[in-house]
Length: 528
Image (cartoon, rainbow, N blue to C red; front, side):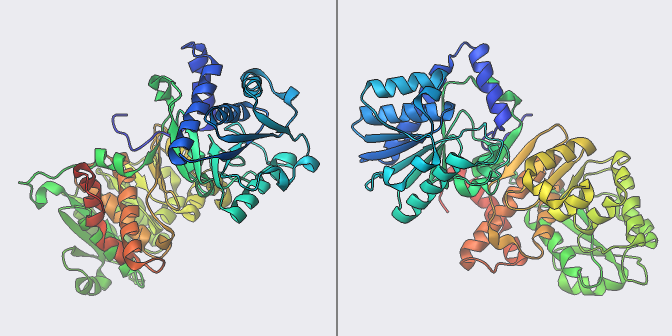
């Protein structure tokens, strides 16, 4: 892959493999990795809290607890009153964790053994504690948290909520699945997380994203080549800047492509119009809406810059087999096709969709009712000649993949990645932290967007943005990933201007050029 957005993000399995290879292939001792991790986290603490005088470090008996003991030792060395609450007996610690326990005790470090729930009391935390370090569980947690660790997590959260004490998680907030962000019964709510080597997927996927706080990635000396196997990225402003294409000053509309959008039915003309305008605002040179002929006069009134073409339709005023010949004529000379916004459902629509998809020779973006048509005839994806970009929300994804929505939401990255690989398509799974996945196992987690975007028409805008980027010559996967970021960024700008919840899709669409400009402004060091 020759393009990159933001940071790579690893699963727990990938990070374990990277650590193991660093030890076995590059000869970096685990003890050195632990020391680098703990010292890096300590330096972040002192950078953030230079006047820190009192800290409590909750340590489990594994390597995450070992990282916490390194942090505690460095804090004590710098005159910070550092208390370790060990959720185990000292004799339970092994390997590198045991080595760092001994080092902490050797310098006179203060430690309280808490091997059982009955011994864990709120009073163990000094009332003047300015920092709590969560070093209970790391990336290896795969089962629900119970017993003593759960009680410790609840104590940390309750104490921090009542006192305002800053909470730093070590690598991953304890109780969060590092690979998918799921809550494993209970989880620490951190103000910041010092993570090692690479960020983890669970830092960015909800609910994990709500528990992680600020992320600081600590370089622990792992060779960059070991991260080549990781195929998950975040889509952030810096990455979007590297991806976006500047427009030559001498360009004209013909240089920026012609998008065809087949959309609309009674009661859903707005979906087509919003998709068309979004494509133009994303930079397409020309946009044509192919719409049911009986609704054409409505579109003539609703559109200005977007062109419209009447397509013969059924008595229901929707596309059907009669629509196919004219729609096929409209495909000529177009650089991208979008199909689905507001086209409705039914056998006639399904047949229309089938004929268009199989005739396409340029990229096709499929959304909304186009996805519903596809769900009943998935084998079309094995016959299509053109690149296909699907943009489902979880409900539509459920119908496409034959999975429960809850299963999809439990691991959005894995669900999107698996589907894209199986069907050889680009899959844009919409929602909080939209995921764009490619057929070679690539996955991108979008970091823009806000809860105000949970309203009607937002998906139509995303369809238009992606189509508009494809029209300008972007490759399908970058268009999908960058389109998701621009969509979310436009939503963020609209949200900020409106002051919160209540933005609508047309608010977002108006902000698409400003979203693109905000990306380019980074190159000049400008602030919003």
